Image 1 (tube, helix red, strand yellow):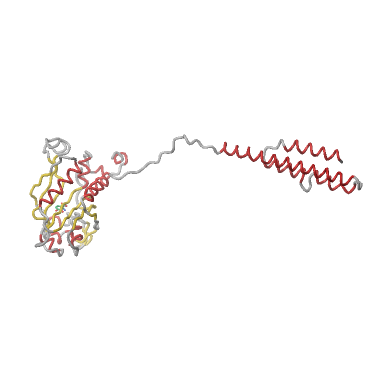
Image 2 (image 1 turned 90 degrees about the vertical axis):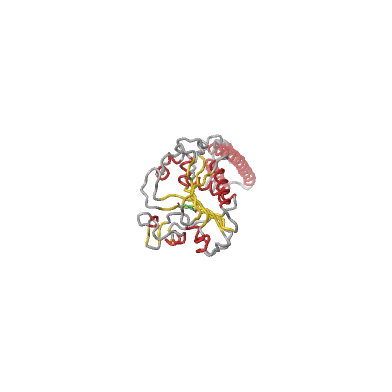
Length: 339
Ligand code: DAH
């Protein structure tokens, strides 16, 4: 029996040191130390031994078990280490590999123009307000002093929803919303979409974008309007840009002007962009008509104001040398992503 025990020890240790995984090691443990294991079988047979032999063999069997257990523990630690190394190897990542490129979207060129203009006005102390695209005919025309027979009110010029409601033809009704029931001073801009019954061509679209401006306070003069627009023109089109005011007529301003900027491509000497003129028409402006102020509850004998409206699509086209407005709305990413 002594020989048998020593043989088991030798075979078990040989086997244990050859195991290469936690599973293999566990199989060996069960084989030698488990309930149905070889060592257990020997211990079961101890009943047949003499009274002298029994403690001697018992002690030997215990020390064999302890040795096998110690070997298993030692091997378990070793296997744990190599399995960890294998896992490190398997899960290794190369941090020097280039990453996947994410495609970043960008703002539409018109939105870029609006944001640029908005920032210029914010820096000058203006507040941005918005008005609805579906507007009361009253705010779009009547409150802006547009006479009942004004051609822009015609069904063929304006998208009516019903006789009282329409798609606004201009951002000017936001002036009315800003003034009505408010205390002066007012200093706002309002960018947004406007709609007119126009056919689509290189310079027209039934939907386009305007940016409205309005300042109301005591002692506001045409000089304030000129100074403001000069400043904006230089920031928007480059230092040295000049403005030119030409008399015009808008129902809601008196006096009214169309405003040109000196051509930012040729500096005023005449080129293809300005069609040889040296000037480019950019906006409408004027001093708020007393009827409009009074209609909104602002006393025109105390307060005065100026207003202007700029076409943002047109500014975008001019600034980016785009020769056809349709390109802005066809949404071809190959075109739009250039800006
Ligand atoms: N609303 C005018 C248009 O659509 C533009 C305009 C002209 C706005 C003069 C104004 C202004 O505020 O004072 O043509």
